[in-house]
Image (cartoon, rainbow, N blue to C red; front, side):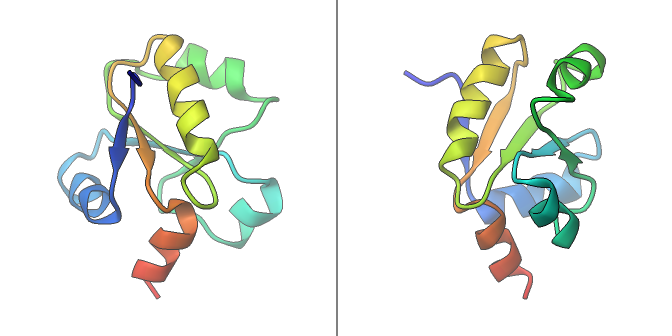
Length: 102
């Protein structure tokens, strides 16, 4: 059983609007992140991972975003194991988010 929850684009849109404390991390490569990302997202990579975990509020919901919703599942599982209580993996990833906002 996974320790994270799958999140649809519609669920994320609702959470993004109703929960200002929502944390979003984007694990795509730097160029993709710079080209476009969900408002308020933090770019998370191997270089800043330990710093992010040390500074983040583990009691606030955390959404992990990748390209298509596959890599984010492993990252969400890892972040849950590091102590985050509410971890979500965005189904469809940034490409689905972008498509919904095009």
